[in-house]
Image (cartoon, rainbow over all chains, first blue to last red; front, side):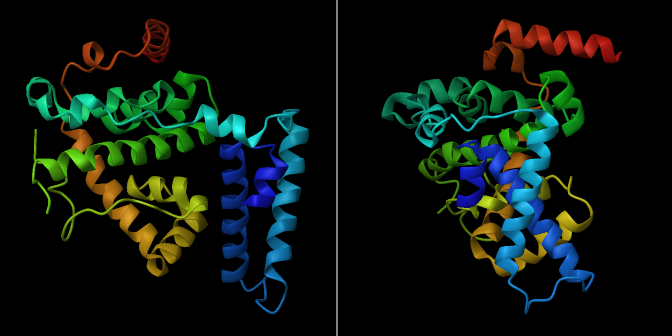
Amino acid sequence: MRHSMRLCGGDQDWAQDLVQDALIAGFSELRAGRLELERNVKSWLLQVITNRFINQYNRNKKWTAERRVEDVEAEQAEQPLSAKIEAPDATVTASLEDPILLALSDLQEDQRACVLMVDVQDMSYIEAAEVLKVPVGTVRSRLARGRLKLYSLLLPYAKSRRYVS
Amino acid sequence: MSALFNNYPVGAPPELHPCEHMITLVSRRSDDSLRGPAKWYTDFHVMTCTNCREALAGLRALRLEIKSIEGETVHATLKLSDQRWQQVRDQMQQSD
């Protein structure tokens, strides 16, 4: 992952896609008996990641190496849990609106759009990508992070309401 | 709405900390959009990784909860920007 992040100049989504592709390719090779565990699997994976990065870079002519990891992390900094959910006097607000809707409103807009389209509207990843005019991989990534964020926003609320122990 | 995480399989839902490189794969597995080697790999990983197994169960439960808001007044409540909603409407009209 570190190698991939460096290659992608801190573009976390791109780096994750590369690592996933490499691991899936490795798993396929292993299942097909074309990759032996005696070989240096780590080197093989790093090679696959690097090759795929070069291919994608050449294809997209997209160079983001000047982006610093710190900048990307700052962009993705999580917003604080909505006070509307956790504040002691929030019961009024919470009773007026569904907590899921409140939590959704705390997501970054890009993530929220993906969650709404795929999970609520039952759109496919491809349809969502077409609507948002972004690559399918970006939809997958935003959706995954949006779902995790949503879960983490809702968990304290669920516990406070003693829905869970 | 239904009680949050009532759909969680067993016990109280934990914090989710899937492996960094598995985040999108686990998410896609939760909505059954994975196919082929990616699905096999994810299933294999989830079998051996407690964190990712918990994440998969949690995300599946979450998806069921999210479905419960279907039909509610999403537009008015969620405050997507006007530009984004216009984008969605334009694309919907084109696909019609």
